[in-house]
Image 1 (cartoon, rainbow, N blue to C red):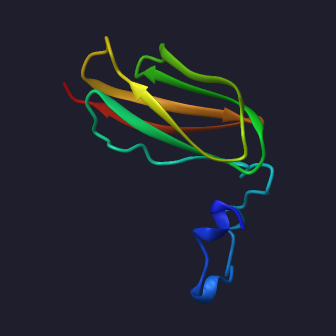
Image 2: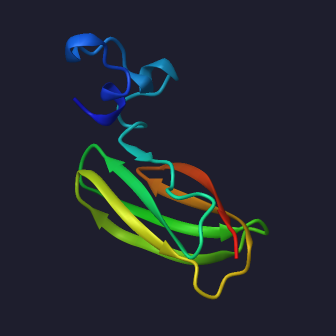
Length: 116
């Protein structure tokens, strides 16, 4: 059972649906999930969870709202399962940033709010 199935599991642990299928995605498209960053808003750091169905090459970056990359957090292979990546915003000003996960030709983004 992967994270997408766990999220839709019914009583007794039986899978009653698949979140990816609910949104019309196939397994390949749902192989990577960028979780909610905690805490958010944050200062000075936040944890970014990434869930992979199989070991994969990923890129995890942070951009400002002008589209400029301000950090590359991961650029390489991550193992299957859950990985937590710490983002320290040293040297960055208060504001909204986008955390983007790229894996297997798909891209997911989450908003991050840095409060100084």
